[in-house]
Length: 499
Image (cartoon, rainbow, N blue to C red; front, side):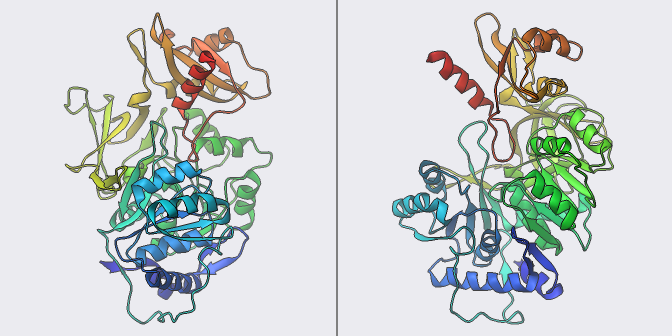
């Protein structure tokens, strides 16, 4: 058990801003503590006992932040789910979570009602932000009364994976996982008393959720932004003294393309969620953006390895050393450990690794029984212990007996001046087994031909890696965290071929 970190910050820095709401209102640590204490009391008065689960269908805003802290204080595991989820999607999440309470914004009322009816849950539904939580007419003990504590071993959040390789999984993260992640991130990136982290990633994903915990553990400020908007990000950098920012590669590309975009006082731009091509990192750094490439996953409570803005990024997929306390090893197909520089399957161990995932009946299943998480990613460790991530093992294209990493081909395609976005996947081919297929979004509406692309890529890629098919599209299917949904690309192609 440890003292509740929000409670501690309310005593240490009562007038320091904990949050800047989407409407610009600042909420101090003392004010946030009062709100959280009241909400915690309401959860208890509603009969939500320690060990229960709460499912939230709330947009980024103060209500969701309050619920994150109040649920932990009440000993309840919070499962934040995309507030745009359909009824079927919400029910699939609820099948794993088995919530005692469902909290939703008005726009998610239908999904919340369906979940509440199916699982006999208490449902609180209200307006876009604060209304679902309402006000609680009860006495709340002052700050110097009984000190609230958090059980580090207890489930803190239940976070859905992005589901790029299948249905999302419900990952159970403990308070200890979150605390270890927050401390290791601060040790790698540094933290100042006036730090302000802009939250423009969805808070129902681990990348957005993790920064809330980093801030409260360090006593710094989170600037909330409802969704990603170029103008809103640039305004926050200019007017709200933002010093840290988390984005995915697609977002960074849009920032670089925005006229007059400048990093202002930004100290760290944490770039993750999907693999970033080397050219993007170098172009951004050359323009003054302090890019810190990172590799992480929900099962590891966000960051696994991160290169600092001052670290050299020598090649594609480089993400620096694992964070303090995190161990990474690389295994060959035969199960033996790979040598430095040798590519293999990545395995991760450390205090940030989740102990369990929930199955479709809500039962916890061990995630890493021996302490090592087997990922679906491939990479290599160099002699200095720095990690390079090459992509997911199940995304590898096998064409004519040769392995092709789609991320490598995408990186080369994105260097073409006529291409704004690109995705690559393997498609069935009677001669080669699989063929390399590229989906491209033209920058100005005019797409290069297959022959032109193959000629341009031939300078950087071996012949078997060159696209054999090119499909022009207006947009690529991506998750909210920026990851390309390769299966959706191939499925759409199969559907079109069958129609």
